[in-house]
Image (cartoon, rainbow, N blue to C red; front, side):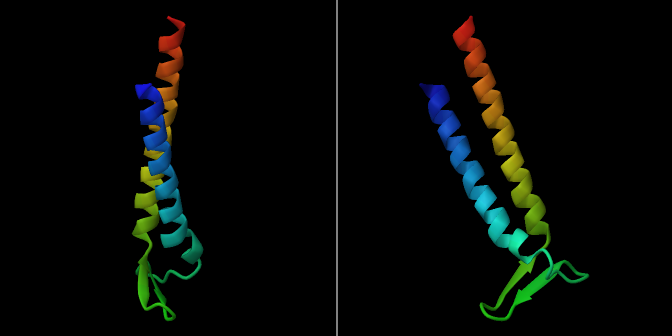
Length: 79
């Protein structure tokens, strides 16, 4: 039961960080200048290239934890 809850929370966090990665970095990957900034004149928002690394790292950590929890849950059910 607790494994299912932890897995669901981690998958939710992975989905949110994946969306943030897409919204804050991936859509603007061709726009960044030498300083790692992209200015969107329509919204007046400056996107930073470092945001991609942060959100992608969080996504990979959450997905790694999901795999670990699922592996431990399967192992625990066996024995």
